[in-house]
Length: 551
Image (cartoon, rainbow, N blue to C red):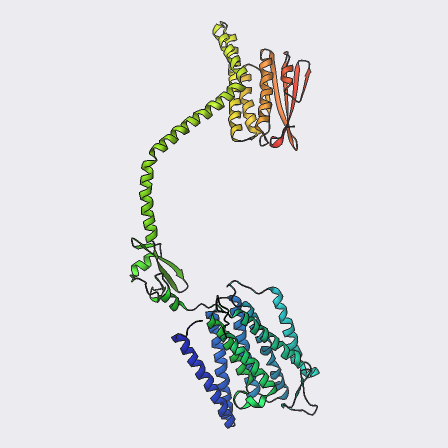
């Protein structure tokens, strides 16, 4: 629980003086009549109203949790409302109906202040962002219904029963059956709030209950019982129920605040005094408002420079700054451990750099060896899969060296280039397959376009139509390209035209290849899904599933 500091003690003294003045004014009013009695009543009411207003303003400034702040602000306003209704009833009107209506209005704060106290008790010890569950809002319904019952008492007299002969305002009334639920509601909310506070009012790590927060609530329950059933006992000194209840409820909430059950935005001086971090809070002109005991003296230039970023005060200390509402907070950060660690790391880095130079060189050598091995593996794979084409190129080059006819030599070179294109593009597909099992049809189209360019040099009519953007397996792209190459290599000596296109279905891409030649392409047909030969034209069909799934 917070110890009383100078400011808290001063507020307590002012409060006691104000309450004492109000009690003295009440006694003076009992001993006098006329304007003096009226003036004492006005001054007394103003004292209480100002006290409750100031308490509400203080609560809004001190409390952190928004929900509790709203509840206690509403409580302070209900107290002011209660005192205002009481003042008007006693000092400003004599009309019987108005007097009775103002008396009924007392029950607005009497019914809702205990309810709000219950809401505050349920919120005790909760984090700043805590919000009561929505079902708790249903508690407003019985409170509102009971208030309506009191306000309409003149129609049914279920709460207060007046004699038939009562023509003017008087205290000769009795309590009706409707008064029991009204009082029961007030007691239920107050007792529930009290029990909740008892459960929560414990010293952390101990079973000891903090008595202070619920002492005012017990006093309020005792006073209520005396007021209803033993009014004459308290009439000489505390017969005015309104300020007594308001003061007791406000005291209960203040006790919760002092015990730390209601989080407050106060205690900076104590925090800074006991804090181990060198820090200070300044106003916008960098005038120090709060400072810790170990805070170093700082010049105005250094504090302003800290706005832009951390400032090094010495080898082991950084000054940091952050804006807050109405000023700045500056704190020193001890980085001696970090500095020592950095020095150690730098020393270790140099040692590691020296000791790892040989290992780094070995790693680079191993990396080069592994790179060469990987290249050799890929080249071996390419050579294995294109061995027939390599052998064919070797034979064509030998024939080219022996050929004397320029036209025949040109055709041999064209055939060699066509096969070389296939080897190059086939290797490209192998390299792609090493990285990913799926490729775009545009890659296959690029392979075929380059091969078609070689065919055009050989005066072969060509046509290619393959849409891009469809994903197929690299292995399926190889199947299509190998089928094309097998057919071309077989028919190259008697090849008149080649036509190839594809059609995109919902789940597949169908490739159509048409080769006009007098050669027998039966061996190439084995690789196709279907092959038809008609009047010197071979037609091949190959269906490829999308996303690499082959039919």
